[in-house]
Length: 246
Image: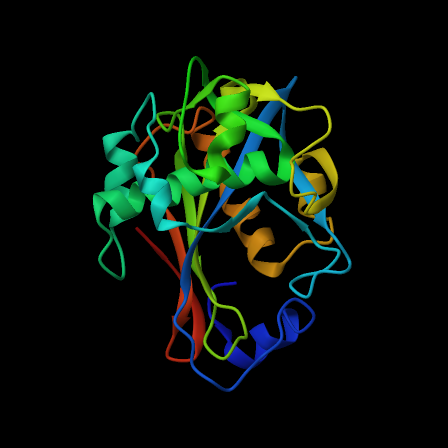
């Protein structure tokens, strides 16, 4: 995707987002790439969005959504790895420690809401926040220590919805509870574990394909996803979609 013009990007994503002439500031969002291993293959969890959704209907996506600033006040059992936190706070725009924490926690919350997977450790947990009651009900303390920052992408200007999305990853072994019926929001019609190569051939957004390609290259040299690796950052610069590194 490096070097695509705005016109080329609009052609690729014409069916993914409606366009609008009014400028809009991108909102913080986070998505979680949950990984598993089967023999020598790495599998990734993806879900299909309902066709009734106005935003990317029918596309396969990772669990994710907008960040709630209140997420930063959730009690956790393990903080972000300091190297990963520094990466999350780097780049364009000031990102405080609280904001980085909220972004990371929102990826965990959305994974519970959309996929019914609670990441953390078994233990007593209580909160007054309605969005986190599932963790209290199932006895899971949220944990951030194993999360890794994989990519960042800002939706180009001129879109009805704009997000500054951080793609984080975790392993299936980090999931403390898997609910058999999926998440309570029912936003994803179908949840599947796909080999990376198959996931890249699925009906996915263009940016998702690029991020999966970056992830596949990183896994080849860093199969454990250790902290501190360069993080691709996709954004529009001088009317071209560019990939830099954080």
